[in-house]
Length: 202
Image (cartoon, rainbow, N blue to C red; front, side, top):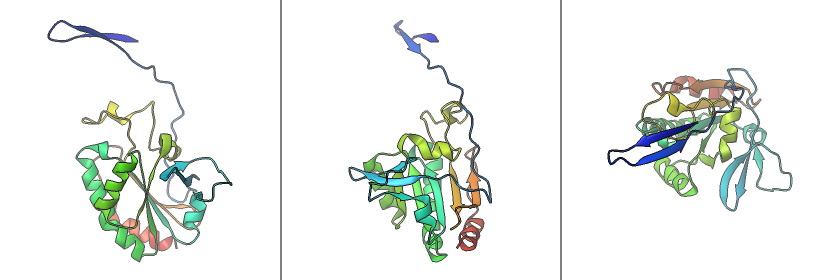
């Protein structure tokens, strides 16, 4: 589909809109369900996610490796959430030491560049793992990213492809102990419930 837009000077420009391809909407995992499997690896020193196993890669770690000894708090995060982003980051910063004290670990998946990941790490000032979710693959598998139902379609102030704000607690059995998905950008994870799920997931 094409649209012609005329500016105040009378210049006409043509925009072609991409047709959305229907895709099956994946539901986020719920409490007590098995969390989708994914892998963490380094590509030329850049920490990225993968959905495919590559046994030859010695840096490769799976969710199974991560939860073998400690429950995992998995959060999706994007700077492009506008005013919501710093609030979510502050919650993660406050949660990180409490998660660790409860015997858990924090993993943040983002769509940011390597440079921006460094900035996020400095803001958090914690030992949290931060990885770039390559091609939104993990977010898609967790039901918190969809190209056919984009957030910019319904939330004012967002103009990019972004994750839905979300946080999951995975126990050592890889089952979800707590799931927070904020479709409307108007809520925050329940800290007490997060920490209880970490404790119970040990």
